[in-house]
Amino acid sequence: MPTKMPSRALICEAIQKRVLLEFRYHDRLRVVAPYCYGLSKRDGAPVLRGIQVRGASASGGFGFGKLWIVSEMMGLRVLDEAFVPNDPNYNPNDSAMSEIVCR
Image (tube, rainbow, N blue to C red; front, side, top):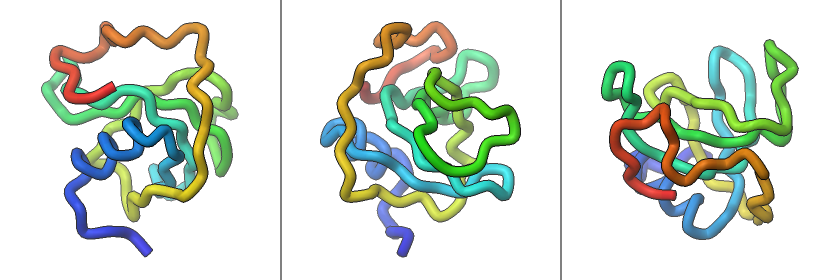
């Protein structure tokens, strides 16, 4: 069941604990390894950089970092499933973000 904790706190907790997040995005269930949360350079909206590991994907995009718009996530919840951050292309100073809140 989704938590009532604010998205920012929930996402940062998952990043710190290195556990997966689950949410609906554009009517598809996604399971994502979260790497970085911050504000988009484009419009200042909260965004998450993460790698989708399971679930549905319109683009077939698994195994590389995608940018997720937090306001478009529905039913966000932290899973009790750890992951090992191993993305060779991960940049902790994400160029798509004007401000990084947690990584």
